[in-house]
Length: 53
Image (cartoon, rainbow, N blue to C red; front, side):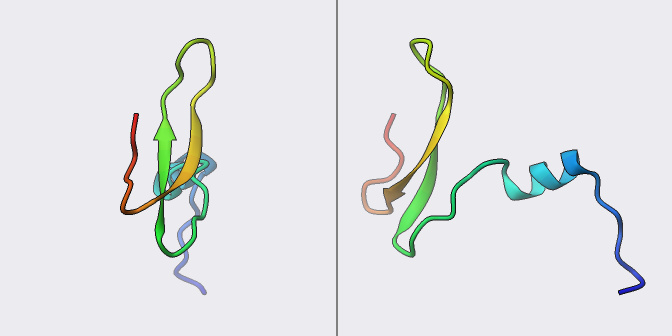
């Protein structure tokens, strides 16, 4: 445990991808950009379907 490097919060967010959800085994996390005044959001989509816009 001596060799652990301290990571600042901004670096940690870059590593983990921000607020991406943890999805089920057969799903992937999809991020949809802001549109029509609505903020960007994440959802879990089936892998077979993929991330549609």
